[in-house]
Image (cartoon, rainbow, N blue to C red; front, side, top):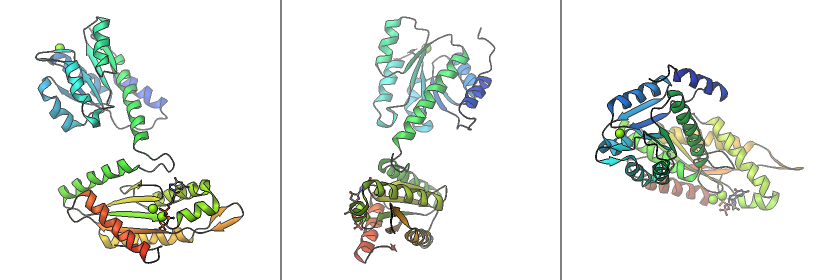
Length: 311
Ligand code: GH3
Ligand code: MG
Ligand code: MG
Ligand code: MG
């Protein structure tokens, strides 16, 4: 009935077009009340190297969204008790699922009904019976676009670091991880000293370059598991998982010292730049309170002459 193609082979080809980088498997949620159809989809997606989470009961959708955090959602149109469109509307009401691609897969061949379904939050309409190649390629394209959009949304464009919103969401994640595993974590607020003066003396583009230099400097000296965000203009936030206050202070102070020794250039002029940091070790509190404590420590450094780290 379905042509004998191996979706896995197709994916291999697509991956080599994307420079052969290994890609995390796409997490695809499938809702179809027909067990046979659901099984067919699961097989096709698994063979294409994707992670499929298949449900046949529409009532389980909320649970599945929570548990699986899908990157792409495939919905059947007609199911007992509800339609794919109703499900799509529920999904779109959730902020964090606003840009998750929804693909309808249905035997419905009435174009006006298809368009109506699309207008309620769907991104594609595929018709059954579907060629697995077609299905896999559609999911792959949608998934890749969704991922690159997400990558743009979470980064600051000047420095490439995580932006304010994503930094806070990473902090929430790390706090709940620390709570579960009983590990510790530190949060660092970093603020460049007299940055306004640097801008005024050497110009805004030089200021921008210093923000980028410092971002690179931090990235090169911190661990892969640490998170670095641009918290505001010349303020950075650093999350150090599995780190106690003493180690955090030492690591950050070492970086501070080395950065302050670098010579920065603006045309024929040369100068140095320093920064100040406040470190707070998480003690079971909320992300907001933790940030406030790091901020207070930072403020004390500013009060006491800058270019230092305080816990
Ligand atoms: P302090 O040592 O007390 O932190 O003094 P400061 O001058 O660094 O702090 P202040 O908050 O007074 O000034 C921060 C300056 O950072 C003001 C703003 O123009 C500049 N700034 C913010 N974002 C950017 C940016 O993206 N690029 C550049 N070049 N400057 C920026
Ligand atoms: Mg159905
Ligand atoms: Mg500031
Ligand atoms: Mg400053």
